[in-house]
Length: 248
Image 1 (spheres, helix red, strand yellow):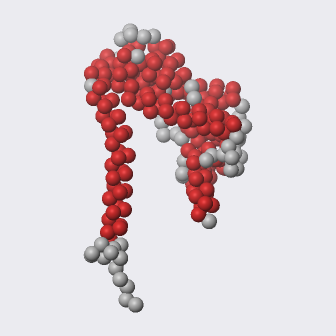
Image 2 (cartoon, rainbow, N blue to C red):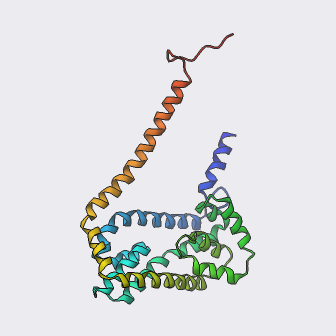
Image 3 (cartoon, rainbow, N blue to C red):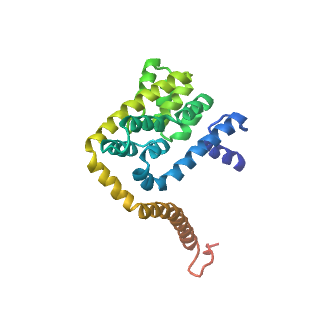
């Protein structure tokens, strides 16, 4: 029973069906793991690249802040505005096909992997019956802030949307949001650049703080769990440190 219980609990971290993973499952999980590692590597580099090479940071990170910063540099003539927009779009969509593939390969399994919300899972199951045009519109709107884009991209793959239309719709939505953010950054111009340069000046401190925080938090959590276990053990024993005797 205990092994079965463990297997049931481990299903949360296994998006595929069945006991054994196929070669495609392993390759896809490795690719998703690579995306996670890339995000962890880029995070401490952001304070440096946002001032020295915002176009590269746009492509690597694909974030809205990076797009706005690149457009601000374009305003003062450091780089062409079209390059900031193209790099922003490429950065936002470069790995979305992996999520589409995961939806095609695993269906609801990958959606459950992305979210624990039962409401989102029910929505995903109902969305399979939606008009295909509504799903296409959802893909276009997925890059907007606050929208669960991984769920929508996985749903597109699950419903067998073809890859080329998916990439075109994804690129269209990313172009719309990139153009909007780039326009704001271009309008701010020198004020935004001054802010970016200030961030760059303190880049070392920011990076060390991020790295230190990432290393410290797991240790603190581990210490808290250890203290809680000791407290539970102390309360379960008598004053002398032995099990309290019960009346016979």
